[in-house]
Length: 484
Image (tube, rainbow, N blue to C red; front, side, top):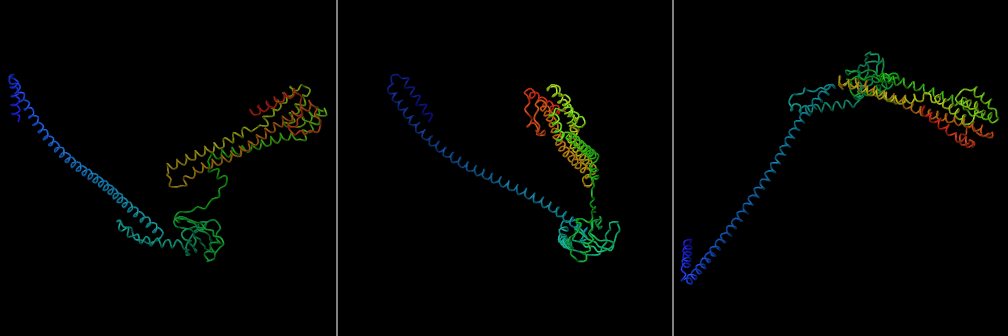
């Protein structure tokens, strides 16, 4: 095919080379071109058909390959799911195997503990074998022995036995066992409730219960039962000891005694403050104040001053200072009265601050005792462990008792101190009102018959100059009293 194309081209070139035969050659060349075009068209169609066939084959093969890949992927997913299921099954089997081993170990331990407990309780059982099958075979005998033990523990048993009296003498008599939680004994030497004395032995309880014991042993039914309940006859029970106040304080250690001493001192201070405030109030009775007021209204200030001089107390001293200086101007008299009130303030407030300090220090000492008690407890735990609770009771008792004593001292001291401080402030205010009233009477000559104890609400209206000075006296006395 290629050779023919070459010849055709050569012929065309030859035709072009001959100028004389141009027309004939052009026609031949055109015909050759047409033939070549037709041939190329036919070749193109064949190639197109082959291309379509190749494409159809490729699409078919691709579809088949995709189906194969999808199937393989599906098989892979199924294989993975199966592998996961098998892995979970393996883990579950491993857990079940471990649980079975643990159950077997727990079962063996339970059988051994039950065997030991029943043997200690007096039941007869065969020895425990080493293999698991032998231990499992003991379940039935152990269950039967336990049932018999439960039946025995839930019944009343009256049998001869021995027990100890309170003086330690061992006597023989009749023992009535109430299950495994209580017992009563009766003999010619004594009777009553029995308690474990250690080692499986029983001893007479100190509390009186002879009538109950003899009635039950003889088959009677007493109105009340005096029993001692226990859970193990192998461990001795100690009778309760009545603690005195001294025992409680001693259990708190040295800090507890310090708190008690602080409380006693606080009680003395409260007593002293009561006496001081009572003495101050005694000098400001209505009868005495009314007599002073009457003398002042009658222009007998000298007699009133002499009466104040014969009396003792804060009220007579302040009024005496006022009455001795009535010849001076009001401002000077007010200053003298304020000075007298301020002089009485420390006496009235005596021991008040100390009582407040004691009320604040007492709980702090209790907290200190708590800390030292817990430190002592932890030291005992470090040295001896936690096996014996009695070893730990000392530190715990110190921690709790000191806190209790600290609060017992602080709460009353705080309450009484606050009440007494309020009473002292009231007395100082009353003392100041009393002096101002006498001063106003002198300057205004209020008519007789007014009530001296009515307070500021019934004071007469003083001159403008006097009223301007009065607040300075009250504010100065109040501020200095608060500072002291």
